[in-house]
Image (tube, rainbow, N blue to C red; front, side):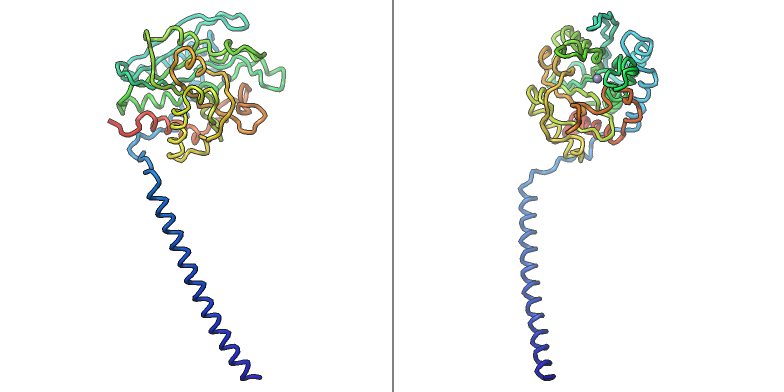
Length: 344
Ligand SMILES: [Zn+2]
């Protein structure tokens, strides 16, 4: 029994070695098979764009630009805070842009206030024909009507995200454009009285009063641009930007390009390839009145109770919700769009 057992165990050991060799050869075969597939995929993939030469967007100074605007208080048109903040912004952009245009006018709100407003346009390379328009509103909503507490609903909002974030990004872009001359014309457009609109229903035209004035009376007669990018609520923690229907309707290819650029830079957590319903914002008027194909980069709360972020038109729209990572994602994507291949 012992002998028989010994022989049997030796046979078993040999069999195990044999099976192991078969397993090893199959495994190596599969691995090399997978390797060749990976190599094929790499060969067939278009080369990744090289963004290493691009100027770096500084999210710290962008954050400070937002804090500076918020420090004036709510920038509600026709208030002292708006006067002071507007003056500050004009002086700021004069340091960096080739030309700064300031439009003054008076408009009437849906609740019958006659308000003084200013649109501020900072132009870089104003003589070039191939222009990119980047816009944001700089005013604050005069009431926090999305608050659930009725007592808070008439309070103006600080609008750190809903206004100041887009302007803060443009301020940082201005410093980059000054030090890295673009090969195309760039217009940074700060629009007033976007957010003094009614929320009672079918009244889209009560919003974007500064934009409607600018589209009827552009700062340069016959003004046009190749494309436009509107920034609205681009600074909050965890912000997600989707393919908003109005933007896709007027500038779908351009929007896809911007989202692809963001993905290539590693920002696909923020720039999500998901279609979402259309909204009323400045880009609607720029598309329909000025006919510049313009997209809206705006925080859409995917799966949320409202289309917009939870802090939208509430008193929570303050510096606590601003996130430097989000600012970097938006700002660096815009730098890549502006400079594309090379910086002169
Ligand atoms: Zn708003």
